Length: 289
Image (cartoon, rainbow, N blue to C red; front, top):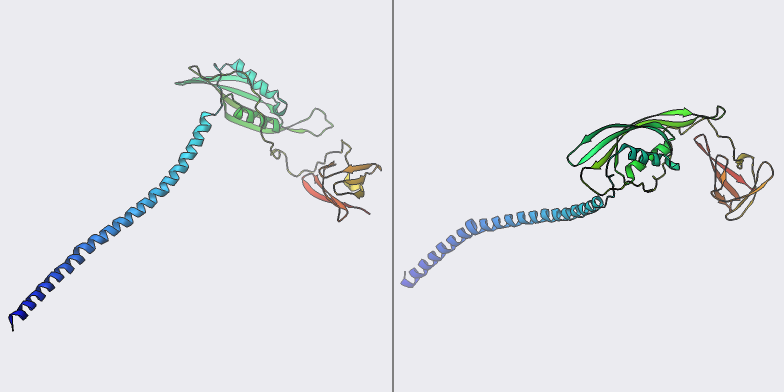
């Protein structure tokens, strides 16, 4: 074997050793390190996604908090300079004298408590009222600017009438404890009552049955649909003759005994009425002859 061949073999063996070592080093060190980097990258991406979502949530919560803070700071509640039973009675009596919250009540001043920065006095109101009036009175206590809080409330329905010949009306007999507040130190105060609106109308009185056998009399001499005759109609007017032969001109929304005119159908030459007969809703249709 020539010297050149020996040298080539030796160089080839050295190359194999170096290549093997390089391959081993790449697979056992660099690949593991690369996998570790990939895992760390994946973990960082997951964390980034998590923090991105948190950032979005933070922005939403921050906006909500800002709105709530503005509402709180602008909450226009007023404390009297001193919580005095005479001032409070006058305030309650003013609310109870308004037409939509009128009620009769007795007023008793209860005990008081002293806290670090404010005083609290309790008052007992007992009386009777129509349901809607009591509802509006409570709404005004809760929503008007003077700060009062209802601590307890009990009530029951009673029937009353001033005329034995009339059907008794539904009244609510109530008893409530109301807390009044005043500051120890001077804060924003006002002892004048400000009329600040009324509650939104509620659909019905929960103390009255939705269905009843009582049908109110036709005291307003409204049109009785079952005894009426449709004489003619236009696009938005109906010409109806009542039981006495009187011609009435009506349109959608016109009031009749126990209900309203709810539809005019010129194509079918008929009108539709919706009546409430003791809680039972009835549709009556009149057509031209």
